[in-house]
Image 1 (cartoon, rainbow, N blue to C red):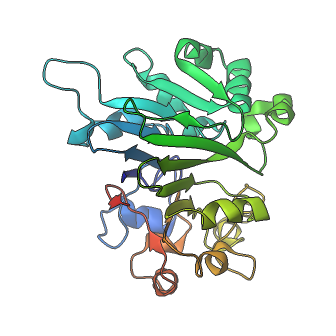
Image 2 (tube, rainbow, N blue to C red):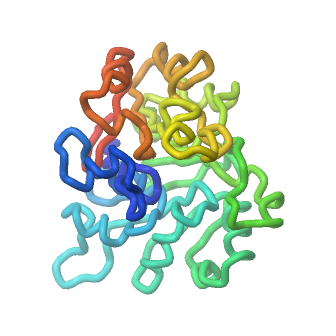
Length: 297
């Protein structure tokens, strides 16, 4: 399988348009040690010819134009995309699908709670209904036209998005990870950019993967509060921090296969290629995803 990182930052990107933090300003100034990051998204392919896109952050259409392998054939308007998978009901992780809806030939797939919550709250998402399939948890489905890649959606605990209001309770476990298996080789990729806690079920999914992209939003639980008093901590926002005895780094360090942090916020020192925190993560054998990175497994 081939995996192309379309975006490695939090859904609004790094720098966000309204972010004046130190790392955001360095990214804005094109500091080579703090690369810009688009909203987290991954393209996965069995053959390098047709792709499935995981996540649809703001600006997805513009992101797709930056990668020649995702361009339509000459004289055509259909891009080589078989499906777009939405893993949460967060607007900044799904709104990109709205921007593509008029010319989209690919199907859209999400857990049933994500589809129903978004369609109930926002009329714009109901325009995607003809293309949108809601799936129950852990049901196998085929990603590509050649039927080589099998995918399953597995639930992840976490808070419901603020914009859902009272409908958030119905969305319940409305965020998920994606497990993709090559039916020929048996290799497995797991995509989980939003992990609120590393419970036993989530750890089992991660351990079974040969290649995993996991939540790296915040390095420390209170890093946002240190920059902006009163800000919510990482765990309050539904993201398990990297550091600490219960952090993800401790859990990932002993796993086989390869791991990459993705969905980085501008508060995260891992955005700086030469920070001591980046060095610590690399020493543990964990990678930090960057836009345009290609990985094959």
